[in-house]
Image: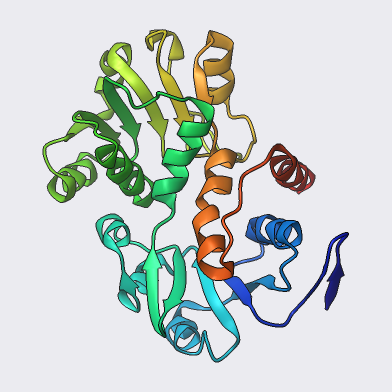
Length: 287
């Protein structure tokens, strides 16, 4: 297969990276990385690889032999990717790897959800990390990345709200006293002192239950971040914008988390542009 762009011709020859998942066809990563390849005029490619969990270890072992300089990893392979690579401190802390690359022949891994979350907030709401408490909904893998990011940014109080309290407690055990596990029914009392409010759950996603949060209870300086990007503008984001609060949406995080992987694989650091965002928006709306 050959793709013709205005500046170069991209073929399936090396260097190439891929997304590994089961399934893998839903990902927007090829749109993002192929856009950057065209932008830089790099003769490379980014593909999707649907790999069954039973075959993941063998696929990773042959990654370089199959012509790949690295890969993104999505559900359900992130924990296996961590175990089968040399992870950095972020991947170890989060307990999952989503980006693989080779360093002098050694397969290394990281979790770019951490910087994707931070960079998206820096872009959408400069100064978001200046002061105050954070309230985070959820205690799954995405929440682990968010909590690690917030601690890295200096937050000393992160109220972690989850419907299964013990999962929130496990994150306190992992990340320390900055994490305050909170039961779901206590959420309304936390909102008035939340300088940052983050939804890491699937609530509000297309086909899922709505997210019952009254943004009117948030302070005027609060920043709202929603990791959900289908629909493009969730009810939480709509309500926060209507209230005049600054927001960081899930699509922004998706775009920003892709930056470092591209740099590691292809040697150039890309930027997230309005044109790229519009390209992914069109694809999301059409599917």
